[in-house]
Length: 180
Image 1: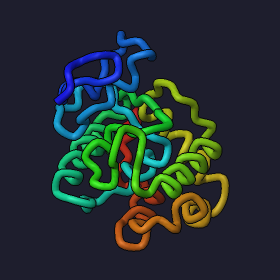
Image 2: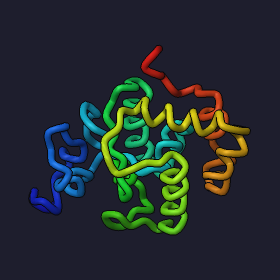
Image 3: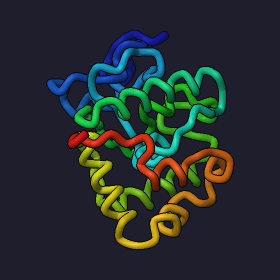
């Protein structure tokens, strides 16, 4: 394990408090899957959809544990802070396809999905309330045939046909809005 510095950190610092500076963003991404979710969550743009569609399946047991923690926190607290990042995030940390910070075996696909979602929702690398992101997603999906719009973003994802992504996202099954 590396010692704490501006470029690396220990397993307790992936989630940062609102007082941390943006210059420390990269250092705050480490080991998300193993810390309680009580502060900000980092999400890359396409993982906004993955967290909505997630139904308990994953690449490995370690990945699934981390994904469970992140999605549970998001689904239970619409006002939780999310830091949109254009690199590795809280979910990537335990993914077996991640081979170093910001690098994935499926980089071409992952970056393509991120670019689609970033463009469609007009996302920037900044802090959002989770419900603001869900509102953006809902507005987009309600602008036409939701299934067709969703399929245009991530219909070629390997998880799309074998998980409940489309059904969960379009039915808002796992979304708790701030009005609820």
